[in-house]
Every structure is written in C-alpha cells, then in structure tokens.
Image 1 (cartoon, rainbow, N blue to C red):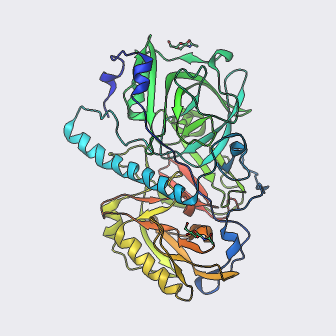
Image 2: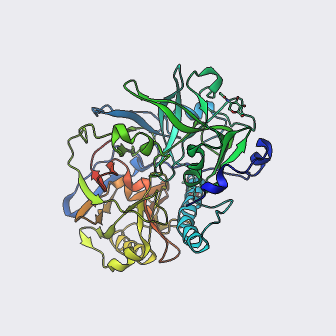
Image 3: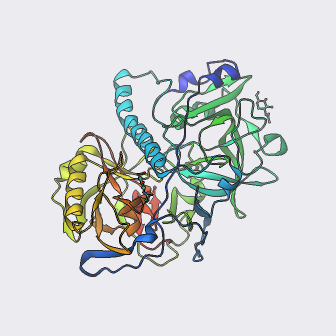
Length: 484
Ligand SMILES: *[C@@H]1O[C@H](CO)[C@@H](O)[C@H](O)[C@H]1NC(C)=O
Ligand SMILES: *[C@@H]1O[C@H](CO)[C@@H](O)[C@H](O)[C@H]1NC(C)=O
C-alpha cells in the first residue's frame, strides 16, 4: 500500500477533482427484529412471538448504561430513537432496498481482498477507483467537534477507517443533515493539513485513493461500495467524545462535496485498524480497545465505548476468540469461525470450508455471509427443524423464508457459532430470523457465490451482544445481554 509517492505531487483544481467522484448511492440498514419475545431454551428451541419480529415504532432507550470510560449511546439510523429521519427528506429504505445495498457492501469488501492480491503482483499502481472502501454502516452516535464544541450525529463503521463530516462552505454540495453543517471558520482549533505533510501521504491507505492537492491544502476523496462518497479538505480538529475525553489535532475529512444516503447523519467514523482510524488516533488513551452493543430493535439503544473501563457493565462474562489479521486487507477484523450448531447439533462442515474463505466481523454488513458449503448445511438443518411452518417465497438474498401470518408464536431452533479459542456463541433470536413482513420471515443468513469469498459475521447476528475489540491484545470478546 505504498501510495505515498503519488500523494502530494498531483495538483489539480478542486472542482475537477470533485468531478472524479460521481454516481448514485447509499447504504444503510435494517430493521432489526423487534423486542419483547419470550424465550424458552428447553430442548434447543426458542419460542418467539411473531409480532416481535416486526419493527417497533416507539423509542424505548436502554436504561442500563453503567459503563465506565468514554461511552456513547448507539441507536439505529432509521429507528424511532434516531431523530435523523424527522429532518431528512430521505425516507427510511424498504427492507428489500436494505438487502440490495447490503449485497453491494459485501461485494465491495470481497473485492477488496481480490483487488489487493492483484495489486501485489503489479507492485506500484493504485487503482483510481478501487473497491477497498465499502458501503456505510447503520448505527449512529453523537460526538463533539471543534472549539467551541458542537455536537454531530455520525455513523460508525468497523469496516472502514477514515472519519469525515460535511463541512461548510460545501464548495461541491452537501446533502441534507440533521444538525447545522460543521463550519471550520467558526472553530478556533481547525487546521488544514498541507500537501507536503506526512499526514497527507497517510490518506492513501485510509481512503484507498491517493490524496490531491489544492493551493497547498491536502484534498481527500473516499468512495464507498454503494457509490456514496465524500470529498474535501484534510484537516485536524478537536474531537470531544465525552467531557473528559477530548482529543486535539484529530485528523479527519472536512467534506465539501458529499453524497449518498447517509440518512441525515453528519458524517462517518471509521473504526478499522488503519493508522488514521479513530481507534488508532486515540490509542494512547484507549490502547486500541473499544466495544459496542448494537440494539436489537430500531427502537432501543446500545453503546459504543472506547477504552477498557472495566469491561461489560452487565457483568456478563466475556468469551474471547483470537483477532487475526490478513495482509491483503490489514484494516479489517479477521476472526476464526470454525463451526455452527443448530438445535445443539454441530453441523458437519469441514474446517477447510472456513479456512479457505477466511472470515471477518463487520458492524456495517447486515446479514452474515457464509461459504456456500456452510450455508447449505445450515439451511438444510434449519429447514428440517422448521418443517411445520409453511414456506414463503425467497428474496433475492434470503432463500429460506416462512409465512408466519397465521401464528402468534413460533418455535425456532437455536443457532450457535463456534469460534477459535473454543468458544460457543448462542445467537439471539433476532440473529436467526429477519422479517420482510409477517408473511415473509427468513433465515437471516446468506451463502456466498464462491467458496473462496470471505465470510462476514454481520450486524443482525451481533445484536444484543457485548462485542469487545481488544485490538492490542489480539482478541475479540463476546458477551450476551449487552443491550436489548
Ligand atoms: C483550508 O484550505 C482551503 C483551500 O486552500 C481554504 O479555502 C480554507 O480557507 C483553508 N482553511 C483554513 C482554516 O485555513
Ligand atoms: C410481504 O412482502 C412481500 C415481498 O415484498 C409482498 O409480496 C407481500 O405482499 C407482503 N405481504 C404483506 C402481508 O405485506
């Protein structure tokens, strides 16, 4: 990823560099499955109230937030706890649209690995428009920016690295957002990064596009898998996570031309492993340690916490699996999936199936993607246990769907994932079924096209879990009951 030579030598006008980026776009997501189901664990089945599978319309934020450290409240971009949609002309996308965008994101992540292997053989060329960056995530937090501080609602994403916000005077164009757009001229702590600086050359690996230069100011551009994009000046600014967690000179993008369905959020926080990610830039305080809980309904809240402030507040015990890295995509969080259990039975899947593909965990991918052989085994076992329910039409992505319109409650098999480090993670019922509507409720997993495609542990399956990224310690922790 040696793009640094190219970096500061190109000088073109801001507008022509702006025109480099275009196209339609979006990415965000999903209706998590609703709350309020009763669960019985006897004989490896869950009993689920069917109406709990549908999105809720009232916000009922979590009350159990006793976390130490810098803890931010997490809500879903399109749920009733988010104030974004009230002010954005953009309506929440349909479930079908969410799944379509999810596939664009996944294609982009998977091509990132293929692309980088091409790159290795061709040494120095950086593709002008590579798929390294991916579609944006679905969960939002509020952070403070500037001096005096103003608060902004921002998407966070473990699958990307670069942090940016829309920025006045929006030389290109800005999309509509909830809060007034950040204006660097009103902040005493904003500084432009110059083209010749070391920081400017770091952009190539964080955005996968070489930086440009405009009157000696470093210009970044980032394009996501769904063609959403942001472009503008590379700057530094004071970021305030909590009143006691303030970071001067944080490197970020002051986005003067941005488009995509960011849902009214002011920008994006990248939580990957690149040196420019928020995790890396705050590592002296937090030691590359963060955790989150993604709420299981659009109407509840979870948390995003930086640092190891005593671990899980719920006292749930964490189980750890090794966090792996892959030189083809060094900023992604690789994990070791080794097997799947359905109703207490380990599926017969050769370990080579997961080894061949490799696996990551990602906060922005909605539906977990599995190697074809693993998905087939899962689907077969699941269908076998669900025989009493009438099947419904498949969606483009999900092929094991049921018509539950005639039931008040259903009995569904437990599903657990087995990870390296000898841990077994039982999924919440919200991580098993994904409802299009009551007459089309689907197994919330999809098979990859090819055996060599990366497996991705997605956010539907992560809901309600404490997920702990101990990056420095090389391990990922899971705990149950982190949020509702
Ligand atoms: C940053 O650079 C741009 C382009 O040169 C310029 O228009 C803007 O005023 C600069 N901002 C600051 C705070 O220096
Ligand atoms: C459920 O969704 C499917 C696919 O979008 C649609 O064909 C069907 O009419 C919907 N059913 C109900 C009851 O809304």
